[in-house]
Length: 146
Image (cartoon, rainbow, N blue to C red; front, top):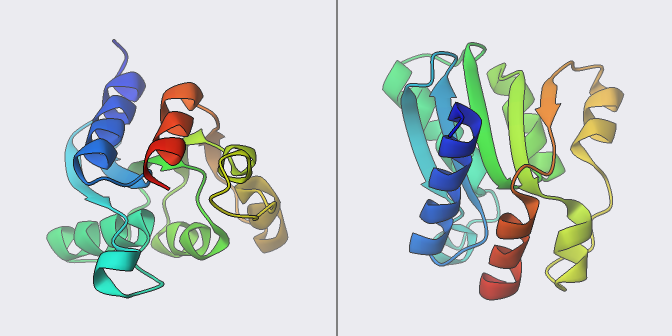
């Protein structure tokens, strides 16, 4: 099993454990776990408590600085514009995501059509994005927990 597959499967397991389709994991470039978090928007009554934002907050606290440029983020679902902005603000330039916006729409869990690639093009932010990794498994989480 590749490192990419290992971490994405851990993100999927975290999402299932937390009863949400949205989970994110941050590792360093060597594959060492830094932080993992799930979406807590409803639980915390906080519209900014996306999985990606939660995990970035935790990683920055643990590393005691704001620069996560040497990190990789694994997300079960394509990050929203607010999460994509947080990823860019933290300096993360390597991103792997599973289900895409079309999967979110297909499961009736949202209407966003703006891709992370489109968003980063507008920001002129360069990132290495691996889209739709283990897409079917991640997409099934949306149908299960929307």
